[in-house]
Length: 308
Image 1 (cartoon, rainbow, N blue to C red):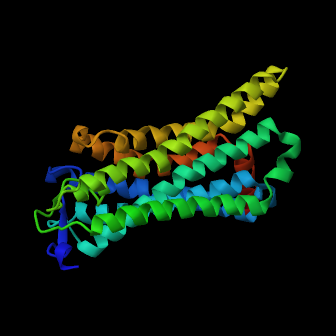
Image 2 (cartoon, rainbow, N blue to C red; image 1 turned 90 degrees about the vertical axis):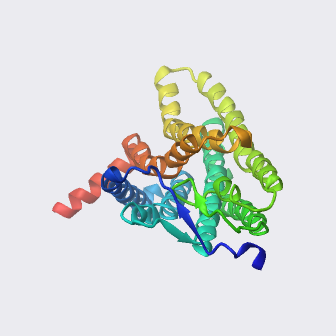
């Protein structure tokens, strides 16, 4: 254990070294964090209280919202504190806890987006068998599998990172403890860790993305066979929100983890991580609620009941 406990804390450089805009950034990210929390909690709440939203689609959406709450909460509170701190430090244990939670939830979300794609595939390609195939026990197993894959993936990275020696320097050029930035500080050769990151990214990130593309190939094929334009539009609208979320999330996470290690640029990595870790979780509730008549209908019912 002593090989890697020489460093007791890390210093996070954050998004910028310019002290003049720290307060502005604090307010911006505080508002975005509160908005993200409120939006995702709202989706979980309406999915729970409304019987007409007790469907596989909203079960998976509630899981996505729960993941997004953990995703942002693992990094934003500490980032907000550091905006107002002169010494932007994080303890060794807190750093690796943050790393574990962030990677666990991120991996789980990659798999959950595949589960949601499969749900849309069954709804459009096999509508008569939808309730038979997507029964509650299968949905629970799929969601549990997503959490398990994310947890195992994160555990692998964390354990291998803990085998490294951190004896200085201890300055992380990032706003939180992300695995590529942390292993760069190792006093030992971290080439094995970089290889594991790349291989796990293929399994946890690219494999679900590949199957999502295949799934949507079948979905689009089925939609094009619908005889009426109104029917095609309705079928496509049930997938539109998911397609937008997949594009936003996977676009930046693939950019982050599927590049060779020597092509990483600190500022680019920060922006990519910021987008999929903070911006996307904040946008997801708006994407699903603004395009979803069922959720808007439940919200309107709640508002009417409150004013009766």
